[in-house]
Length: 270
Length: 306
Image (cartoon, rainbow over all chains, first blue to last red; front, side, top):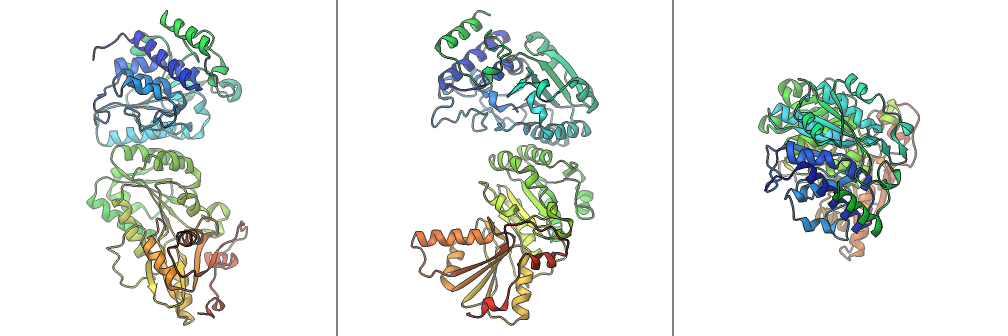
């Protein structure tokens, strides 16, 4: 498969994500758009995988923890050939396997998610298993910022550094809006970088929408020998569509026809 | 019973390099024999049960067969959602072992009384639920848990229980089997978990002629065997160290109802359920004291019409 330009790939992910939520009248487009650039860089530049053999034993493991934002993962996987593009048309329709929270029944999706704060622990188990088997592959976990409210996240964060899981990478999609408002109004996460450092992680804070910065950061993994790596990716909820950006409402709303066409137009022109 | 479990797990681990034991900072003087022989397949994750289950899932995804060991409600209630979503929905061969079923740790208070665990575990799809009645049953259930490709919950009583089964060969035991301990003709006692020894001793010491069956499996249950029990006996007494909701008595009633509804049985036995009433107990006491206090006792009068 000819490799596409990563910026174009991110646009395609956004367009397919918008189509899905528009057709299905589904929620969570804001968080799907905020992580689109991260997915584009990972799947276009960083991860080792084989769409024809999703369970290839040497693949890098990518696990989405913020399962509600799954449309952009489904779009990414379809665009990369894990399953036919027309499967995306069934998203959230009666009888479809494309649930509105990421489903392991879909080729390329490692784990079903939905309840927040579960997946980093699973990634710890994967990374620990890989470590004792001396496997070369890495485990990437993409989590939301609101998830860091969950105590189970901090259990896993402690575990990862204690066991020196340096092939474990946690990316926080830090769009700063959770279900009922701003993250730091509901339960303050700051100083987040310091928290991770004090919990024994090597940390980078980056702009989660700059393709080159993402690529450059991922290419430096692991950031420090013997430590798990955390990437605090500062993002914008609804990134790429001006009326969705930084808006809590688009955690819930789905676009009407006019909004949908406007959104597609904006993304195509970027 | 926990000694039988850990010894069997060690035997299995010698044959099967995938077996991995995780503990939630519990198992002092119990798991040492495993951890010293298989240090790379043992992990104390700390007092963090939700993370323990997640780590087990990650290990299972990489082909390991994790056993999770903790006490009372910690490896079940504390991480119920992880068990449902991550273990059972994905149907991994992950085996959750809780030591201290019922009032085993009774004097430690309600937090350490595992009296709803069976009901909670049996309503989750893909989960096999076991409560061995003695060390022999615990041994074979441990073996079956390794062999099965699916999740198991294994509820153990504290160590030291005597063996109710004498010289029986369970090597052919299959998941769901009901084990006959004593013969009888009109009344049968159906016991699960640690009530087996008590029931056996009560029947023997009082020279009562009745059948005694052990239910090491709450789910699944061998339907053919259960139907034969329903057909054979006029009176059935279920006894368990668990809330009356959701445990063995519930299972028996549900099956009986379904057999009746489907016209699958001719005889409809009376069912007396001995289980913990719908309440908490806030007093200290030994396991036997708390069992009696909660009414988990057999009485001679139950058998008068046999």
